[in-house]
Amino acid sequence: MQKLLLIALLAFSSAASGEYLCVAEEATGFMFDKTRRATEFNVDSSKFTIRKYKEDEYWMRMRKGPGYDYGVFKLGEEEDGARYRCHGPSLDSFVCEGPSGDFNFALDYGRFVRTYTVGYWNGQDNNKNNLRIEIGRCSKI
Image 1 (spheres, rainbow, N blue to C red):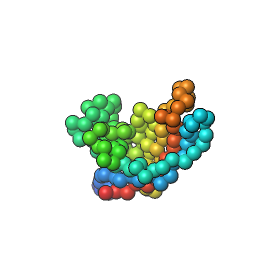
Image 2 (spheres, one colour; image 1 turned 30 degrees about the vertical axis):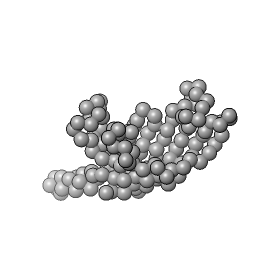
Image 3 (cartoon, rainbow, N blue to C red; image 1 turned 120 degrees about the horizontal axis):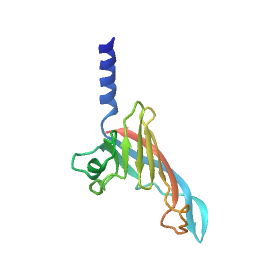
Image 4 (cartoon, one colour; image 1 turned 135 degrees about the horizontal axis):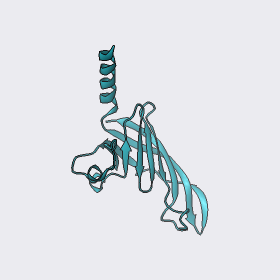
């Protein structure tokens, strides 16, 4: 019985690990253009990869505590480092955090949610930090 459990766990670990391509489908939030208003955002350039850190990458050197083995990288900007550091994969998801919001991805459903929460609450009424929530899908690559 223990051997079967170990085999199942190893099979799940190898299926859950790997690299994922994530593409946003929709985004909504608030922007400031003389007044604050609800709006939709363009997601054409909102593409990310989720992958394990390389040993020499910033977050790998700076991570605090166990479990931050993965990062979310903006497609085409991977040399700039991870936008989010991730716990996971857990049984069914990656839970990622960054300096300006969160990125969460459910392996079972292939869906992600990304938030950008800088601005407004800290008194900034400008169009540089628009509150935003984005949804999309990830697939294994």
